[in-house]
Image (cartoon, rainbow, N blue to C red; front, side, top):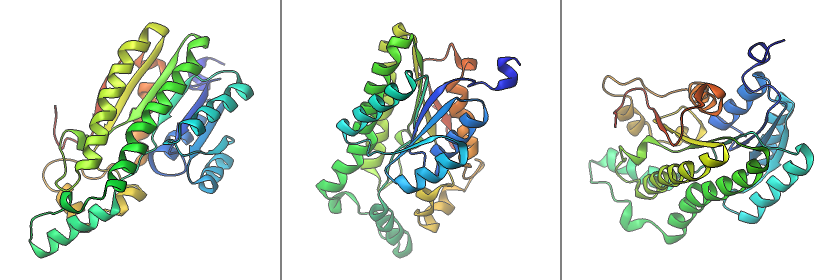
Length: 264
């Protein structure tokens, strides 16, 4: 049987964060379906991660990516058990449902959006701790694990909100813009070790996170000529392309996957 018949990820050991639901779960399923020897399903929601892992024959890990020690222990455990890491997809991230409610209130009353003046320090820090610091922790440990094996592929999940910022979402937009810059800087550094780093920047995706978006805001996002909300499976196709050998010459890219809402 050829590698093409086995799948693009035949024999690979993969790590997917945020894999208990949404984009991460779709990626974990696709990696397993395309031949990955083991898929490590990583999420703060451990029980949900265990369900996805059981479905695909993977291994579940309950980890908060904002905790550097937890991420370090995760990769140490994986290296002890599997001896290598070939593919890492970092899909873990959070938004702010409270800010979404403020946006909803403004849409309903016709008043200007007022999020910044009500934004708590703790919320600002948590958004960046998960979205930005978590990306740093995953990138660092991924590179440490991949270098001895001669390389690998890492895909981070940013957001089109880094370019087309949503009014009332300064903390989310800034955290994702930083993810893009961080990933591209690391990409230039680690390609010399045979490690490719790329980023997918989704527009609206129909996930549990998106379900918290007020309907008035969702309606505005679906207006115009652009394709509306994407599915998690559509994002998975973009992500697994970047993680595969088909993208062997793609390094430091930020792939817009937003249905034509805008280009850069």
